[in-house]
Length: 240
Image (tube, rainbow, N blue to C red; front, side, top):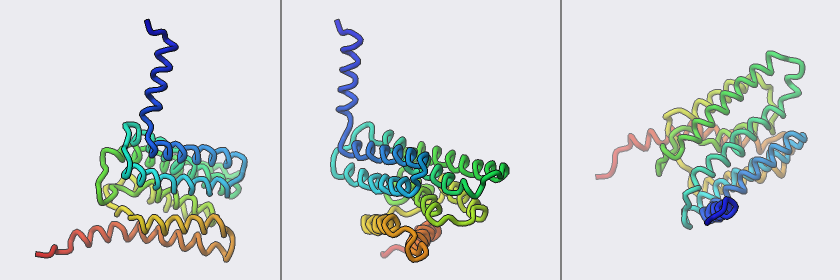
């Protein structure tokens, strides 16, 4: 007769056996997001931003590892949960913490910013929960959550006037749940993104934040130019 304790141990062992190498990287991604949240609460905002960026890099790595090794049944579920923490909740909290001093004693401003961030959070939830069912080989349907995360973290580095950037956060959030197609980046573009991330973290505040501005410009080129590129390539006549 199997006791409750024995059954519990058996289930725990079977859960662990379901994990793959890619899943372990996904767990590390989630850990980066969790520690980033802790750093935000202790006002270590630059360290939190670095951890979010690290989680973003790991998120790209687990996809590469998953394609070259076996994939497990937990992969898609784990990835959505990890991305929710690292690429949605943590960047939104970082943005709010960065601009909190701009909103001190302004109730209407806190409500406005809070409403925009809640809207962005809901769009991220919809985006991540529907990702596996709308997955395509050559393009993303809707703006990837990673692009939104980079956008929010870069804004926290630049510390711009908050009111003019709120409409852009709304637009980026709407883009996540839109039917607009965005091209998937290849390994070379992922390497360029990683280099940008490393430089932004290492040289923060040097040369009037020129690197975050360059990174933000490149991101906006992807957000605006990516769908246009796909549209034009689709219209291009094929060789007979």
